Image 1 (cartoon, rainbow, N blue to C red):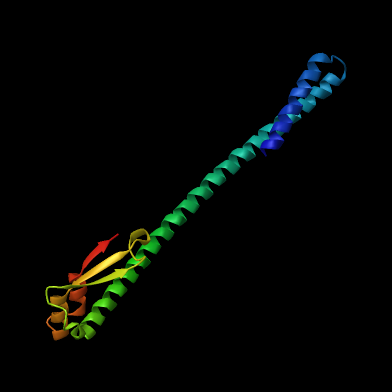
Image 2 (image 1 turned 30 degrees about the horizontal axis):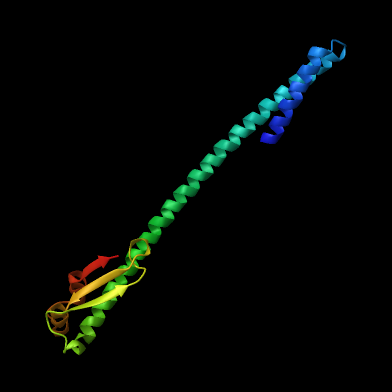
Length: 153
């Protein structure tokens, strides 16, 4: 479009130049050609503005879709993180009795790679005393998951 517009503008200037230097009968023909070119130029400019508006609308649509996709991915990642936390706490409740040799004031840590915000690593820290309470049945696995301390790096 831009190239066609430049070509028509150049042809219009050429006709104006020829019209100034030629006073023959062809002057009327040149004037008609000039008017036709001006109409074509106006038409192309209108098409160009329409295409520009369409391009802007498409960019906005793409940006909105990208925002929606990012929001959806964040929700899925949060859901996955919740499932992983629940699985870890259930496992600790079921098999935590195997940690007998670990003192009660110690902690059990899990490093979850790529599950934090923007694919950072997450560390979940569970108290041995809380694990022991879950094994005995004093607290539930969901409570154990909530008591865990979470770090992100």
